[in-house]
Image (cartoon, rainbow, N blue to C red):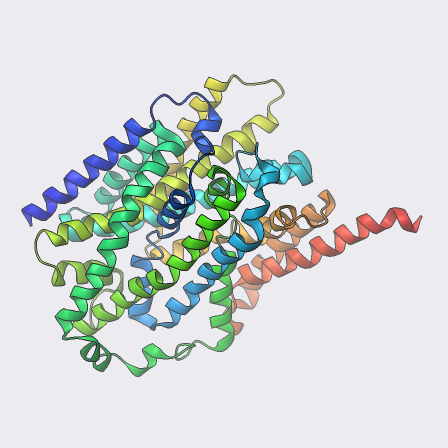
Length: 461
């Protein structure tokens, strides 16, 4: 155990040093947000993959597969589909936004200041919620492997992430993401292999599992509920701020599109691996707390030394998402809320200073999310409601070059929020469909109808 703890401590120190040194001498908000716009496809692939493979898609996936079966893996492939669609239809078009720093910048081009400010507000809420999911997972990891309380683990892990992401901005985030991706992409499959060997091989694992764990949809779930869950993962993180920022950092649109496509392809087997670890945990200890499925397999099945490396991989998973969403929140707050609402120009060094402060304060807000809501994946779904029903439709319209209008944006966003809230309040339990999906479709209908009416009205006079 001492050797494993030493490996983890050394890894955390390396990440902190790489992040702080790699992000030195930031001069302005653009460097903090997009880090030069010159990265090759493999860097875009690594940083995108490290960003989306957070606590919810790893430890959270293992937890849900432990409880409900492989249906959760298939549902998560909705996220993989979304990545591929973005790579095919949106990333190649990003050359039109070569000067943009944030999602709000894109929205302002079609919907004016209102669109930018609304986007910035919900960017901050979304990013804080998702960071909360990541640091919540880190609390579990520190508790299981290092013997500290979850709250202390949250404070330690989030403190490290806040430090290097605040000091180094996007450059530090990308550098640490590459290191973290290498560790997690090798460590997590290693844990699954050793776990299967511990049970006695693939056949032994299958023999110990309930038959219902391989049903799609899961027993008692219903087809509508499964489709709703799949669509939630398609839509929930679509074009969220850190992913849009990744579309700005490639050296050209083709490079960015290629890196995004690789990331989507990689996610398919990786989600299967993290979910399968939940099956191994169920085969080993059916009465286990589901939240501990992945940590239990690592602690039980791996030898000393290798265990420390894989624990570092688990921490990498959490950190690589947390730092990106912290940066997304800081960029969104300054670029999309403070600057548009300010009547006089702000000096570049002041913009950078405020972004760093917001980065740190968002981390503190995320700690509150993590302590209040126990399930990592549940935090993600709550956070998605701050984004998909409001922003996804009008943002996708801009990026795809479709017809847009300010009135359509306002009508669609209002309808999306109303639809999501009303559905969750009155129909979610009886139908099994999440209000997020309903909200997105309400937004789409009202956005399209209002925009069409506004565009056609002059010709009718």
